[in-house]
Image (cartoon, rainbow, N blue to C red):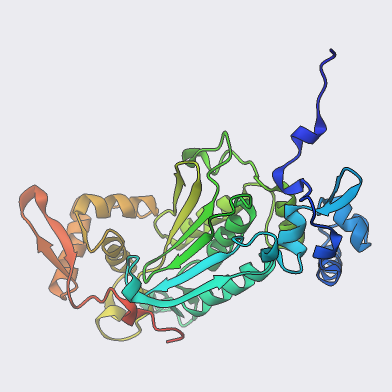
Length: 357
């Protein structure tokens, strides 16, 4: 028998037909609006008709002699995506404390709808419930120009959310995606580990999309770029903000998680002792808080160096001594076992983060 390439086996999972789910499950009005805007953005040049667009992009596919919707079609333009994929939702939970605890839930919601619906609603909640202020470093430098800052770099949050929606494994029917918001960090976890050949260590270098059709539709909508640029954007925005590098985890090749650390709460205080802190001192407090409220000088030095703030242990000791003098840190232990611990004068709970405060 002659060897041959079976193109069907080369198709992505999001392009395969869902048996028994016809074109009537797709919303032509949503699709027409998407086409119009994609053309205006110069991100789509194919057929303008709705059904032709569905076929051309892979939202519809043939199953024998029937036209059926695909995962990409249902999740991007479905009338009711959860009628086909009940667990294709995001579980959004906002905690008052720094750990998962049922007694500290500020808000819990199950976000459904299309990928676009979910992205919009989750993004709106995160943006409305993070701290916003001005860059106090400009005042220290004598500048009168106000620079608004958010607790998390907004482009990085958006890209992480788009990656969660674009790369999740929608065939896993028993699990949902999670977005957990804490006072100091955001955890985003989606079903489906990294694709074969992609590792956490090389996530910014090796790019492969689990759902290339969904990725293309997100690009057309202006919510994504070429493969791999989302991770590059996240890392670049964090480097620019001089925040600790986001943590990426491939959990047993079944789930993928990103941890986004936010700016120190002290960044948003315009009065009292916090207004007198240097940018480095605020970052030190953020590092200690992220590490559970205690950290060694070596840990602080290493974290600062990863943000581009090249510093030696003796400089860290000088900064921590000043923070101890004003009552925001205390020394614990002695000799080589010395750690720096947050005091009761440095809030760690939701008092920092009341919405719209």
